[in-house]
Every structure is written in structure tokens, then in C-alpha cells.
Image (cartoon, rainbow, N blue to C red):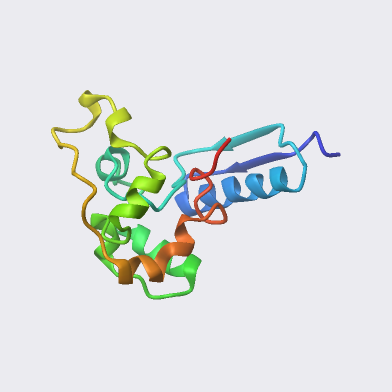
Length: 144
């Protein structure tokens, strides 16, 4: 039945991401998931320097593993350059800022980090990983 869809995933962050992507696919097909339970998923690969990514890198989420997960998702070898957000150009950063905007993070959660001007990045690296910024991999980067 269309109204009884539930997606749920556990602490493996790449699986939480997959559950969110799956729910988005249901919505695209006209279904309306009734509920979704995600426990600390990675929902985007756009900004790898968010405080939650940097601070909570203990058992549940290992910051460097994002490179491995993205390599698997894209079926390409991805370098750790993405961890410094070099995989997006200034233009792309501007395009997606409404979804991932550091200025919305309360200052007490920034761990003393200052906002970085989005005037850096690599066009070459962006071309390699741009699929990671689609709703098929990053369900957070879509309009409601």
C-alpha cells in the first residue's frame, strides 16, 4: 500500500544515506513514505567540514571514511581532497548554499571555527565527483 512505507537504517552512516535516497525515490514515484528513521546518516557530500562531520568522528562516523564511501558510490577513486571541500567550485558552493549553510550553525557548535569564504575549489575535482551532489546520492540537496 502506498501509504505504509517505512525506511529505517542503523548507525552505519552509508546505510542511513541509502535509506534516505530510497525514500526520495519513493516520493519521486508518487509514494508518500509514512515514516523514516535515520540514526546519524551522512545526507550530503557537499560540505565535508560541517561541525557535525568534524566533531562526531568517533565510533559511529569516521571522518576519513567519507572518501571510501564516496569512492564506492561513484565507482571511482576519490582522494582526500574532498575533505577540505576542494571538490566544489565557488560557483557550485553558491548554488548549494541554501541547503548547506554554515552561517545557520549556532556559534556554540562551531568549535571556534570561523566561516571560510567559498572562493576556492577545483574544477577538475568537481567534474570527477559532481554526481555526488545529485539527489541520488545526496538527498539533503533537494527542495522539499
